[in-house]
Length: 153
Image 1: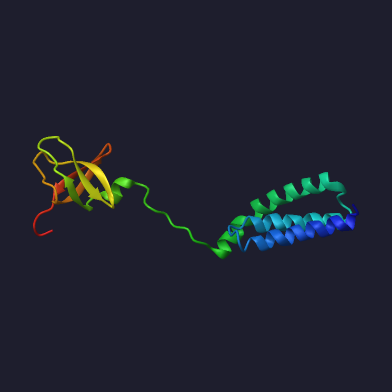
Image 2: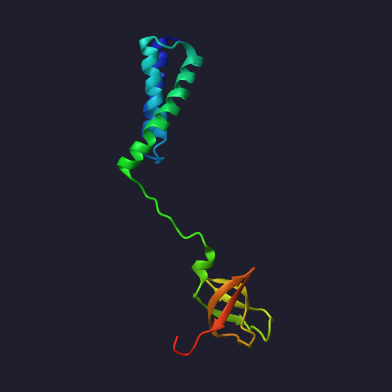
């Protein structure tokens, strides 16, 4: 293979990777494409010869470009990033549910329907009949601890 053919292959690979950034966003693939362009330039200038040196230069230049410029481009372009609550206990606290199977008396578990799923539930020791609206207080292992809602709630 002639050296000029290798230059064109690296340039085409670089262009393809940079265009792929439009489909695969994230700011990484464009740097891999830019490293291909660096290799094409080095081949054209006669700095590297052969596939082993080309791949080595591509690998090193990819790492250098990623480490050097990714933070800069992320700051300039921004992006979608948000932090969600990772504590499930806070998400279910004070939510309403419906009793499916009677809860109690004492520590007898029943079942409630919460967010479209059935959950085992514990009460305050009194009987909470099926069909009662309840509020989730906390979670104990896999069972949800509930209390009946007052009439005004």
